[in-house]
Length: 125
Image (cartoon, rainbow, N blue to C red; front, side):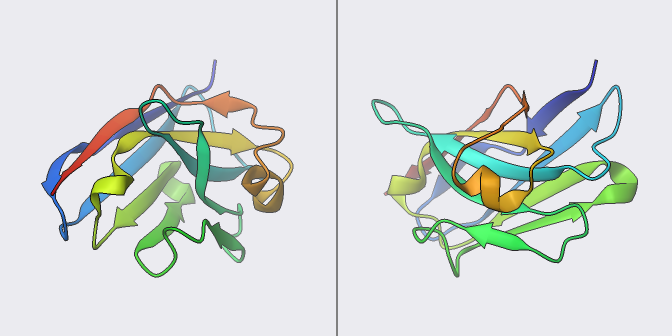
């Protein structure tokens, strides 16, 4: 069974950086879009970023544009989320997900077929 495993979360001060990783195990995600979502305490899950299999399409939430960068290494079955200029409002559990329908669909939070277990990011002020 294919699984997604996130890592890289932690505690960081406002203005700092973190890089999250999400690795596929038990298989590959050939032709799948992969993306990041987050859920803060007491809030609904929200889209953060998504990337196509070929890496030619990337989508970002307005709240993270210019600060976060999504990338993927298909040889390693891994995606990354580089998070810079972090703010306290970025505090959340970050999840990666996979979809065979493409990154635009992921942005609409549709057809999210596989999920990771999440990694906690805490940004202190």
